[in-house]
Image 1 (tube, rainbow, N blue to C red):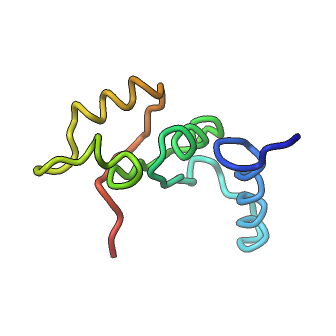
Image 2 (cartoon, rainbow, N blue to C red):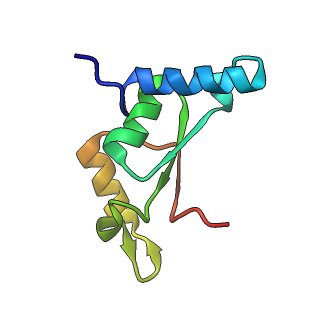
Length: 96
């Protein structure tokens, strides 16, 4: 069986191929940013592929991470310790 979802390579390779078709060239991994709210899939997949990750705290881990004053540093440190995943960047949420 081949599992193709995050954090495994096939899903990322499919995205890289799609971007290459659109752009007409391969994008350097140093220019790719994975964005997600799950340490075990989004951040783990980015690390596995050698790309930077932006972890969104206001997602599936929000109960552990979000307090009245924003992101709880202690909760984030605990989650990183539990999962062994270290995102490059962290923000509360994306909004536009």
